[in-house]
Amino acid sequence: MKVSVIIPVYNAERFIRDAVESALMQPETGEVILIEDNSPDASLAICQELSNHHDRVRLLQHPDKGNHGAGASRNLGITSAQFPYICFLDADDYMLPDRFKPAMKVFAETPDADGVYDAVGTHFMDEVSKEKWLRKRSELLTTIHKRIPPEEVFYCQAVGRYGVFHTDGIVLRKDVFNKTGLFDTDLKLSQDTFMFIKIAAQCRLYPGSIDAPVAQRRIHRDNRVLRDSDVSRYKQLLWNKLFQWSSAADIPQDYKAVILSTFILVNKQNGMSLPTIVSHHPNLLINKLFYFYLFSKIRSIFAAGDNINK
Image (tube, rainbow, N blue to C red; front, side, top):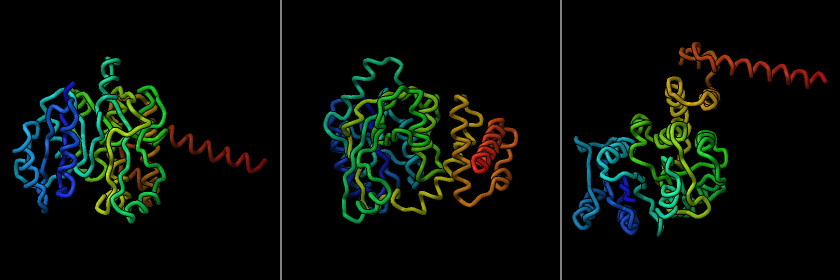
C-alpha cells in the first residue's frame, strides 16, 4: 500500500516542517505533495527546502501562483497524485507513528472498501484556543464513536450521529474522486464537509482505529473554525450547495430527505422564512420530498394540538 499525502499550505511556516516529517515517518507514504497557496509568510521557502532535501516531497503551486484556497489546492494534489491511495493532512497538523496501519488492515480484509476513517486527536497550542474549543465542544477525539456499516456513515457526516471523522483521519482510494468529483472551490471553510458528505453518500467507508488517534489536530488562534461568523455564513452556503447537489444525485431517498430537512432548518436559523427559501430555490416546488416534508410538519402540528387538547 502506497499513499499520496496531500498537504495544502497557507501561512504555515511554524508547522509545515513537522507535518511533512510526520508523513515521511510512515513507510506507506509514497509521496508528500505540498501545494503552496501564495502564502505571505515564509511557507514557500520552507516548502522549497523540504522538496529539495527529500526525494518523496513534491512542491506544487497553482498555474498562476495565486491564492485559491484549500479546496482548489487539494484538487491540484489529487489530480497530480501518483499512487492509488489518497490521504489529506492539514499543514498545521501531524501524523502519529503507524498512522496507516489500521487502514492497511481494513483494505486488505475488505475488498469493497472505498475508504477507511480513523480518529484524530487534539493538540492545543494555547489556553485561549483551548477555552474557545471547549466552549463549543467537549470531546477531544474527533471520530465516529461506534463501529457501523457503510450505509450509516452518511448520517454521521451529515447530522453528527455517533460523531464525525476529520479530514486528517480518512484514507481513500484515488478512484473515489472519479465518482464524486473534486472539492468545491466556492466553499472556503466547509469544502471538506461537503466532500465527505458526498463520499459517505456514494461510497463504502469502513472504520479503522476509532478509539485511538492516528493524527493530531492543532488548535490555535488562527484556526478559522473558531471564528463564529465564518462558521455560520459557510454553514448556510454548505447546505444550499448540498441541496442542489442531492436533487440530481443518484443517492438513497433517505439521504436526500436528511439533506432537504437540514437545508430548510439551517436557512430558517439564518432568518429566512419558508416562502423566502422557496423564492430563492424555486426547484423546491418540483421536489417531491419537499411536499412530504411539508406534510410531516403539518401532521406534527396537528399531533401537538391533539396532545394539548388531551
